[in-house]
Picture (cartoon, rainbow, N blue to C red):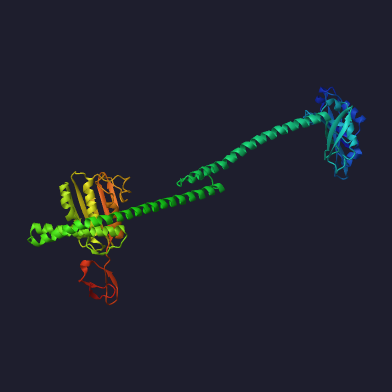
Amino acid sequence: MAITVYENKTEQTTVYDAKTLEAAELTKDHLIGYRSKHPLPFDAIEKGSVYAANSSINHKLPTFTLATSHQIQNSDTKTVVVAAVIRLQGLQRLATRSKVFTTFIVNHSGQTLAHTDLGEVIRHKPVRWIAKLKNLRSKQSHGATLEFNLDGQEMVGGVARIGFSDLVAGVQIPKAAAYLTARELLNSLMIVSLALLVIAAILSLFGSRLITRPLERLAKATTAVAKGQFDIQVTLSARDEIGHLAQSFNKMTSELDFREKALKDAQAALVQSEKMAAFGQLGAGIAHEVKNPLAGILGLTQLSLRKAEPDTPIHENLSIIEKEANRCATIIQNLLKFARQEKVAFESVDINQVVHDAMAIVEHQLEINKVQLHKNLAADLPPLAGNANQIQQVLINLMINAQQAMEGNPGEVTVTTVSTNSSHIQVQVSDDGPGIPKDLQTKIFEPFFTTKEVGKGTGLGLSVSYGIVREHKGDIQVESSPETGTTFKLTFPTAGLKTVCPNCKQTYPVRENQVGLKNKCKKCGNIFVIK
């Protein structure tokens, strides 16, 4: 509202806002008159103190005076005091901001500069209880609280010193209202606490579900494993400790599943062993019953051969009967030996000759049933180390099975031999019949398993054939489909004939038809005869 400059405690100049003074029904003389009645404490101001005091003249224009000093360095040092009359709206807004507390600002003498009740400022009414706080103006004291009685009403007050001057900011409130405010604050805190508790409960529930859900899956999986379901796996939802536990559980179930399958395979092998043992006992009784008729057939055949003319069809047929009767006796003996896990004498076998002999036996039976028999034999095959009768039995069984599978319909059976590599030979028995269903292909080698009608099959043919091939350290595989028929592939290792160079002792694999031929050693160049 006005600024006055003093030098040596004498007013030098004054600048004021005439329009604002006129609006408040005041003049410059009112300001000068008020300053005459309330002079500035120049001594204290010149020492560096900031002076602030209420200078309100009427209720239309509440003001306060703020004065400070400044030294001017010139030819001689002068101390200038500047005093400003400032409108109180800014401080008053601060004082009226709180709706609960009575807020005020007072100077060093307790005079009110701003108050929640503007009338207190206009009347220059001091805050009396401030005088009880004697140490408040000490630099070591920043604030204080006090309970006091004001006009018979219990009050609670609090003050804090403003650092740049001797001004004090304070609040006061009736004690009952303070308790009410504290209760409202407590209620608000309780509401906030309940809200936080609900939020924490929801978050805890969500977090617990994140933990318990994988554990529930593990528990269900454990129950399934307890019931024997070892092929179960738990989904890995995280990479924490529970995820590691689930990974370990999956590894455990995989191991249990593998061991269960191995146990089932062992049980199946045990069942097959028991069946083969029963078959051996059954075969022993059959052998005694069959040997005597075979001996009679063989004896009569040999007597007939003596009277038959050589090079006649009768002589040839009797020779075949004699040969096959001997083979039947040998087959029975070998079958008994196989069932009893007895070793069979192996020798060098020409696989093409075995195929030729087997086809000669079944050719007539296949022709009667409208099945044509073909052979496709590779030349110069190495010999096998095996038993010709047993291999011939396998081939006959496969060709008869192919003919029976066609059920009287015309068809073809082809026997093929091929050398797969230098150490193995493969015999293939193929037909264009109806094929074997895929769900039965894994069962056809089981003992006593058959798809034929009762009385037309025992289910032992393929099982015995499988045993013979495995005893020859070979392998038997089946490929079948309704479109192409069935192919049995028998793979046998070769006999492995070897010759040795007499000069450097270098070993070479040879075939039986190479015996007696000359060979040149690749190591030393020596030429020697293969033995």
